[in-house]
Each structure stands twice: as C-alpha cells, then as structure tokens.
Length: 309
Image (cartoon, rainbow, N blue to C red; front, side, top):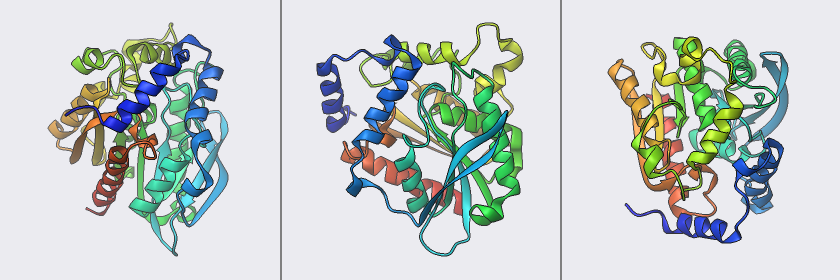
C-alpha cells in the first residue's frame, strides 16, 4: 500500500524545512524538538476529554517518579493500564503522550497511569526499566486507588513498548494484558524493514543508532543483559496476552512482528496488526492524518476487546 498521502505531505514539509535531525543535536535539544512537535501543536479544542486527570508520585528504581492518572467519565471501577511513553529512551515525557493516554482512557474505558521514567543518557539502562518495573509492581498493589478493578495491564509505544515487554516477562500473570505499539524488541537484530525504511519515514536508522548509543552503556555486559535490552531474546512463555501493533513504513516493523510470532509460538494469545500506509509515531499524528486517526481508534478498540476477552 502507498504511504498515507497526508503523512507524506507532513514528511515532505519537514524535509522542506531543512532542520537538523535529532541525532545532530543534544538530548536536551531533542526533548525540546519532541515537545514542539507534540505538546505545542495541541490546541485547547483538540484536548481529548476524560473524566479526570490527577498528578501523583509513584515509587521508582531510585526514588519517587512523577506520574499522571487518567480516569474515564462515570463511576468505575475500571481496569488499570500502566503506560510508558516512547522517545528512544532519551526524549518524551508525560506531556508529549498526554493525548495518547487520554484517547486510551476514553476509547478503551480504563484508568491509565502514565509514568515518567528516567531518561538516558543522564540515566542509561537499566534506570528507566527499573522505574517502569517498580512503578508497575506498586500499581499492582494499589489497584483500588487507581482504576478500582482487579485487572492490571501494561503498555507503551516504541521505547515504552520495549520497557513494557520486559516488565511483562518479569511479572507474568500479575498482568492481564500488554499493549505493544511499534515496539523495540531486538535493537541489535538484522531485519529488512530496518534497511527498507531506514530513511524518509520519520524514524531513521541514524536516529535509532543515536538513541541506542545513549541508552546502552558501552561497558554493559550485553550477553548477561540481552533479554532486558532486547525482549525478543527473553522468556515469553508465561507473559500476558498481547496486542502488538506495527506500521508498514517503520524500521521497527519486522522486529515487532517477530516478537508477536515468538509470543504466538510460546502459546500466548496475540492480536497482531500491521497498519498499512502508516509510519512510526502515527499514534501522535491523528490530527494530521485521517488514516492515523482511524488506526488509533482501531488500536484502542482492539485493546479494549483484548482486556474484555
């Protein structure tokens, strides 16, 4: 299928601007750029309504972390989803993924706990993962204070989906479901999509190298930590049912689908969907592309169905 025409127009406009790409700058410059492309573009009338949004602190791997709890309209109880934002382990925050969490809360009718885990390079692996796991374990023990129902799920996009997959492997049947949106599952692997979609589709090979160099310390014993860096190499035999989302023109497409295949081979229930014409990051592009908006609505509906199955 051809690239979504509205996304193509966006990519053409970005190319026309000729601005330096993220790997040409510092992590702080990258964070500002991501906020400019997400937070700064949200108009008041575009904010997705939910029942309530509250700020709280949750335990992390080395002290408390900021979090944000979204609840649907109504009285509940609701299932709870711990959400971990994307951004290559280097950029992104609670604000950049506010709209994504709001849509999940509204469309899937669940409480969403968005966790602000530590970022590289200031806090390389395993800092963000430790935060994600500790916060999820805390959520499991405090569901009555969150959604109120007994079911807990975990999910995220891109780097956040990587963290979610690793935590899901560790927690097993503590979780009811996992939502993995264009996940990083095998950053050291060799996949055709990493070559075919290496340039021109928003996320590039150069960007991924930049993110990886900040996240993974050069002196890391990769053999010992491989499963926690690349969850495709972990034990998936007892993980929660999963919705695995990929995009046709995404460098991460093939490793995400390889992860879905690994789950399926291990007997895990998987709903795996590839959105043709889409690029990495389409969940943040619903106001720019009708196709992206339709895809996100479908993702959220599928996740609700997975929780209710």
